[in-house]
Image (cartoon, rainbow, N blue to C red):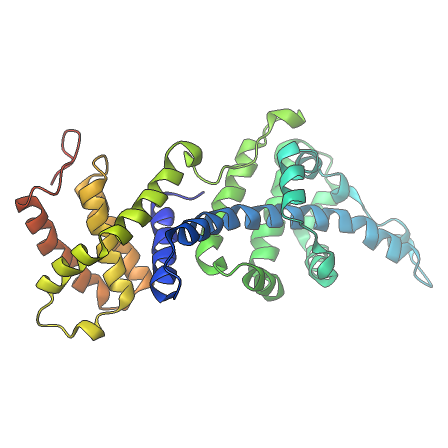
Length: 316
């Protein structure tokens, strides 16, 4: 699920797009930011749908094998057990899954070879042979084969990776979130009663807090862009301004906005989060550069009374 670091990254991506755009309209940037979050959920629904399609393909495979010119005994008795997998049946009957699959227009019919490829790899595996011959069909066992399909086949098959990359522009950074949501789904599905099982949420507190957090962080960073640039320029006088990467500047400005306008977020959390984001999204030397500049800006912010944190131990 989207944690606060993922949400910060979403804001960073929106800010980067905003600064490169000729159309500096905040409403458009806000809409694009929320859409990028929603896209993570859409990706999650597409993945769940792919799992159901693979399960259903057992019926197609069994029919094709039975209709061969000279089918053998194995062809005539091909297992279709996966099509009745309990987890898959519960998922397919989940009202939220049905609603969102319709909302996003999810269908893998545009590339039927994807499902065929996954199933053909699956049916050659020892895990699948054990599954179709096992006597137990409790929900826990049923989930294990679906986990195997994702972890050992979907996750590592280049053609599947390519489809997701082409469909979802932020796939490389959002894949981790989608996997966490899938893991949460397996954890949530504990009952054979359809209505008792819930899909994963995009974040633990999306409607209550997280949506407001990213929109506020985006707007604060843009609204005080010039002021924050002055602080940065004052601490980088020995640097050629044009050689300081835009990503580095945006990371520092976001950190400044968070230090100043988010009283419930501890200073240490803000500093550590943006240093970690710099490691992932900027140049190899950006980490130490940003760390040094932010330390000096933080000291000045404290002198000016800009850091006003609420709660014991939040200022450090």
